[in-house]
Image 1 (cartoon, rainbow, N blue to C red):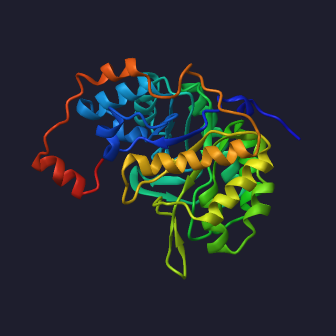
Image 2: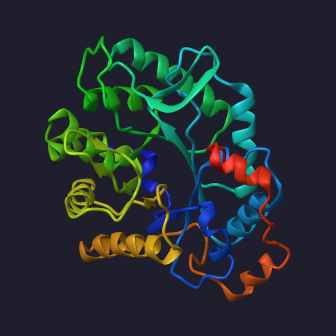
Length: 321
């Protein structure tokens, strides 16, 4: 079996995403939060309260970054301003690695705020790989690409999705963020065997896993990131860890109808329990203590909860982070 450097990334256990609904709870929680994943776009050039919360979290827990606007597959030039802002967030939080999606999100400088699939073609392999290499020269942290959910297949395919991922990651020499829920959603929507798909992936390059919920409309399953995670996806997670043969840092994504912090942490604890029952070893963090530390609580003393403003309410209603 081939090997890669991504097998040696810190194993953090099961973590959760940093969401604004939990800002206040995180300041004082003693729940077993192991690590946090951030969406960097939510902290680019905002400052103020969100930045203060992020700074406090970065002092308390390991941080990794998962972006949504890199648009690595776009034919647009790589957005240098975005890359500079991304690098600033990564440096400020001392992020261990960063990731985005194998897709495109912009055309002609216009962003769609959606993850659009690429054709599974040799041309797309070469295009993405060259852009990843340029990105890595600017941000020399481990970089992972995620398998997105998709609802249409782009024309021009010359290979399967699994082969496409293998070729892209080999050509770019980057890692994989394996979203198990996306595999499940795509397998149901497009009619393929989820376990066989996972067997064919470059598992030696998997440095992180995503787990999430979804919405089954009957005729199509939508990747909504709303939990709790259903049993078939948990079963697929167990299969994935067994297939990889080692523990992998796992992140619970919950972005729709976000519940209280304890509910999300409970999902992370369940994921952690699955790995431990498999006997594949415990988490290896880059920080000496991934749990809450009493001394850290004082770091939040100057982080004041802002009052709600009409502007904030309008931005939230418009879907602006």
